[in-house]
Every structure is written in C-alpha cells, then in structure tokens.
Image 1 (cartoon, rainbow, N blue to C red):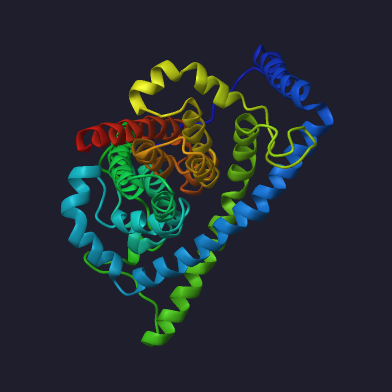
Image 2: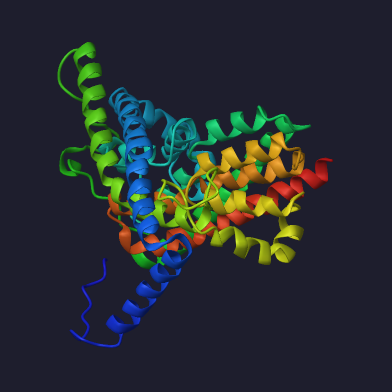
Length: 382
C-alpha cells in the first residue's frame, strides 16, 4: 500500500533553510569556477549527457526491448524462469525470470531491465516486494561486458585475472544490494501481493499471452512493440540522467586538459576526489589501492562507469596500478555502473519511486561490499 500525500504549512522553516543551502552550494561552486563558467558548464554538460549518454541509452533500450519482447512472445522467459528459479530464489529471493534481466543489462546497460518489467509475461512471476529490487539487480550487472573486456585489455600484469576476480566481487555486491533491498520492500509491500498485469484477468494459470497471426508476423510485431517500449523507457530516464549526472560530474571532475575554467562540458570543482583522499586511511585497508588517486575511480563510477574506466586506462598507462586495483575497479565499476545517474529514473519508471532512497542506500553498500570482496578474493589467490 502506497503512502498517502503529506501536508506541511505553506510557509515554514523548510523554505529559508533550503534556500540557504541551495544558494550556498552554487555560490561556492561559482566562486571557484566563476559564475558565468559555472552556468555554461552546467548547460554544456547537460547537453553532452543528453546527446551522448541519454540517446545512447535509448538506443540500447530499443534493442533490448525488441529482443526481450521476442523472448517473451516465444516462451523463452517462461523457460528461463522454470530453469533458474532453483538458483535465483535462494540467492536473490527473485523469480528465475529475473536472470534474463541480468543478462540484458550485462550485455548493455542498467535501463535494459525496464523493457522487460513492462511485459506481462515477465511481470506475472513477481510479487510486489520483488519489483523494486530489479533496479538494484540490473544496476549490479549493467555495462558488465564492456567493463570486464575494457579492464582485461589494459597493459597491467594479471589484468585478465583481476577482471575475473572483479566479476566475482560484483556478484557478491549484487547479492548484498538486492537482499538488503528485499528486506526493506517486504516491510513496505508485504509478501503476498503479486504485481499487477495489464491483462491479468485474461491470463489462465500456466499460460502466457501471445499475439495473433503466423510465426513471422508475431516475430516482427513483438520486435517492433518491444522497441516502442524501449523508446518510452529511454525518454523516462532522461531527467534523472541529465540532472543527477550533471551534479555528480561537476562535483567529481576538475578543469580537464585545458587547465582553466572556460565553461566547457564536464568541468567541475573536484570536491569528491578530495574527500576521498581525506578518507584514504579508511579506504586503503578495505580496497588496497596502489595509489591515492585510485579512490577517484569508484567516486566517478557513481555517476558514470565509462568515465571511471577512462580514468583506469590513464592510470594503467602511467603504471600506477596493479592486479588488485583492476579487481577492485572492475567490481565497483560494474556493480555501481553509474547508478546515481539512473537509479532515480529507473525507480520512477517502475512506479516504485517511494523506495528510491532505500535503493540508493543499499546499492551504495553493495558496491562497497563488491570492492572489499574483490580485494579479499585477490589476497587469497595471490
């Protein structure tokens, strides 16, 4: 049962306090970058994210939606659910069908799970408390293939071994994140109610919905219908990606190659890496980084795994990192995979935005667990 709307006084302490904090943050950033440069960077970064990230994710969602719809139409989801329930239930407390979402996201990116989540042949296997956890599960494996292959290709000794250890760490992180989320959603939704399906009243037990027509007609129609869902999902994630990722990038990045603030896209005040350096005495025992600069990678992965992988490649070219670093970077980059830029939009698209705060909190814990697990596994193997 969803919470009712809450009410507050029209004018109270909340407004002036928020205004002071809001202005304080932007005055601080503007003082460092310059007011005009700050505004120009915000606009340029938002535009860059829209053109190069959001439309890319939309293309991924269209492809994933088409493939997922075909799998649904011809019973592949039902088969996978039956075959993998024996694994997914005890590990994640999710139906076997969710493993297809893992694969979709591993091959592409986090929002690929959304195209499945709108299909009745997929939704019918889920209880209400399980649906929000799909965001955490999907994000844990988002961009997995790209992350692992990129790490393996680096000119670092034992890079392949490190990437594989990182994959194991990411799987452990996914279990932590999903299980914590499931624990919370059970309290909120209960454990009995099933997810509502659009055609639930016409769906006999043990059957699935299919389209009319020949096999070829069903294939084409399901492919196109799935692609349309992908377009809708691509549009739905634009606000979250543009708004959240712009903020994260401006707090993470510095001046860039130019060395000066000139209003270019993706510049920032680099405050998050600075905070990371101050916390290095805690993070070093947990992750075992070879350099203090290593903390910038997971911080960047909060908003963009692609940007984080680029930082790793730069460190590798300068011989600053080793196999343990590759393992930890792989685990965290894969498990987090820019979740701050997609989590909010994904939870909203799943119509479970009331659980967004918990999803972010528990996935933060899961990503840290992934990095620690990779460090421990590496230490046992070396």
